[in-house]
Length: 465
Image (cartoon, rainbow, N blue to C red; front, top):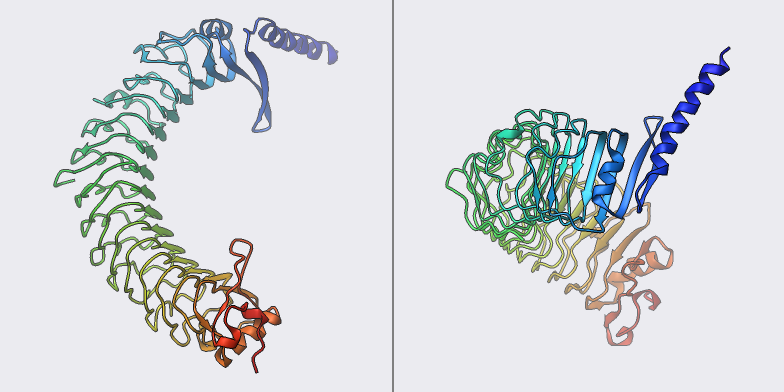
């Protein structure tokens, strides 16, 4: 009695699946997905006929319909046939235009991807009220005139417009994106941003503006050419956690530009033209975990430039023009510090005195002539690596490192080391394998520059009394 209805159900299910398989167009196949412990069917089509695929999917219930490449490019998307599909992906099909009612019959869509096409205008997705993620990367969208059509998309969290042809961001561009948490505008051609372009994005957590052509911003206000950044451009973005301003040719930062972004955890300012950082510019960023300002033109840093934060773990200041740095105070939990490729000739005595957990320290390719006593001796445990390669060090005092119970790596290749009794401690530690002076990434062995009897010899091969 129990087996009969189950058998009937099984036959119906197999018939439904088999009918879907039998009539599948060339280039399409079924993929079984397990989501939340439940098996679902997805249709994946590669270089298939778009019209045949859509007819094939008519009135079907599919988890994902993926079309990667069309054997005949389609210039325009007209209204799709009625179907139940959660994930709709149509890429590499040469799409240029999308009818306003193109998605009227697929209102269940949660994720829509139309990347790698030639779409010129922002599509109307007003009817997709359950839409969570919209991916329009690598198209030719030139403007977003008015996003009020998104006011019904209260669940839209992620919008990717990377690598399009956006020239400006107006006050209306994202006025309907109030629920958006992640917005990627990187690699466009943005030149101007209106004063209130982002003010309504109160839930925004990640904003990528890197690689654009922004030359100026209004007074109120990633290959970008953003030369100046007005103080109010990020005002009101209280939930912003990640901001990418990489490669925007920024020359300066306003004093209070991040004053309302107290939840910021990651900030990228790399590959710009910053020559100085204003007093207390990062003061309010007390939740910062990672700060990257490498490949700029910084010459000096104010002692109070970094926040009083016990949460900053990574600080990247490499590839600048720093010839002097202050002590890094209050960065108690700093783990990674990169100052390589600068012009430092000396380090302050209190350099990282309060950063007791440092594990990776990069000071290579500077002009350091000596190391202060007790420089790293305060560290709780031996760092994984201290990179001092290619400086002007003639000796390395034991007092700078103290006595550690665990192995560490001190990279010294490219220094004019004077291998006398002052280095006996290091030679002995190398031979006892307490210290290492090379690693797989940098296998070069430091050589002695003097005295003459040791000149040219590997450090670990010499004998010192």
